[in-house]
Amino acid sequence: MQAILKYIKLSLTPEMKQEFYKSLAKRCIIICKIILPAIMLFQAYNMVHMAFFRKNGLSTTPHQVYFLLYVVLFFISLIGFIGLLCWSKKIEKHANTILNLQFVYAFIICLWGACVTLYDQRVTENVSVYLVMVMSIAMLTILKLWQIFIIFPACQVFLIAFFPTFQPEPTNNAGNFINTTVFAIMAVLISCNNYLSAKHSFYNNSLLQEKNNSIELMNQKLQTLAITDSLSGLYNRRFLDDIFPKIWSSCVNSQVMLAVIMIDIDNFKRYNDNFGHQAGDRCIFSIAQLIQNFLKDENSYAFRYGGEEFAIILPGTSEEKALETAQCLCTSVRNYRCGKGEYAATISAGVYCGMPNALTVSREFFALADRALYQAKKNGKNQVQLYQDDVIKEENFSNKTK
Image (cartoon, rainbow, N blue to C red; front, side, top):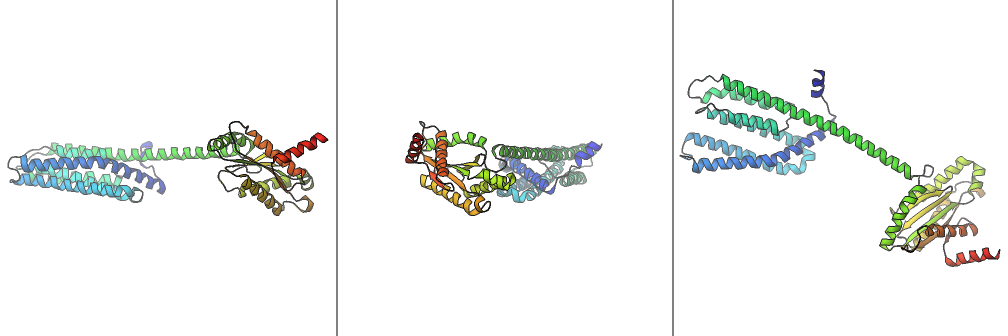
């Protein structure tokens, strides 16, 4: 019993309830776009048959009454269908309105079935039209609970109250009363089950979606942690190893330039010794943030290459633009004044820019940028050096004469 009460009393948050009604409204529109044209087609057939093919046509009162009932249901269905076509584009905003219109139409259908059945009592005790309408509404629609307990009981009371009205002579209607009441009760139970099942299904799907979103968010966080250096907040060396072959292939296929900038914090050991390792960590973080904030292009990547060294990859960037970027970074760090006096941190940078192709080795770009960085250090630090053949030749000649 407690399980049944718990099943019935399941409550949704206001946000979930609104989403639930939206899902019901979408289902209503899908069903009605199929059912309403079928009802209109069937009523149109009945009208044509009654007017032109039935004996005596519309010259008799019973035929006129049935014809009027067919016309009424046809136009109510047509109005409902046109309304659905208009409201179907506004489900997000008018879900409750759509469900209320469904309630009104369902009520009319059941009353219509009751009216046809009552008029049939002139010549037959058949109640099949009413039963078909009631069970069709119960099975094809998902009504709110308060709507369920209005439609079926009200229509049943209406049917029973007027049942003897059209009968030509007093008749024992106990059998029909019992049968239609049983069907009305079954319709209530079926409708309640449809509503509660849809509600629980929506609730469970919402919980599942929420869990999936949480898992997805956790996976994204884990993925971010896996590719991010914890100290600097930049991409780590592992991600560089993963992403660089893809960047290289893209540049080769697109035939665009690729620039690599290698950056090193000058005299970092002396900075650490003077201010302490925690200050050194803060220095690395501060410079990393300057680098990150400076790179606005979504195609640019900044990495902590190792220790106090950083790497920047700039696909589709010219040599002049890469050199300008490195120089601006160098000036920005100098002006930031990380540290004091002779211990203020500065950076040196080496730049290499070239056209990737299938014959070159991708890692040569880092090696050449690193050699340019070495030359910047050699020239006095706190500056930028562009890789040039004459610089390397001069360096090689110096090494040979020693």
